[in-house]
Image (spheres, rainbow, N blue to C red):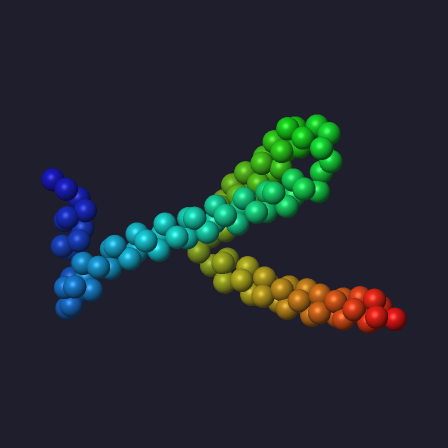
Length: 115
């Protein structure tokens, strides 16, 4: 009658308190992840929106939203089960390069400002 009750009883662990609390924490974790994604997409949207001038603001907002939507759909279509490992490796290598570049850039601008 209630599928979630049947599902809970089909997964058996030797420790029942952990078994019953696991679903509660799993739902909390999913909610926190969704909130984090929403916040990060909103911050990215506001940052990109800030690069445009105030003229014709509504049209540019819709363009940015359409680009976000298209990027999300293409990412879901193109990424399968094996690609996230590759993408994370590329992301970490690119991040290392840009962070080193940022540190040298800040150092350069600090030394230039003192002179």
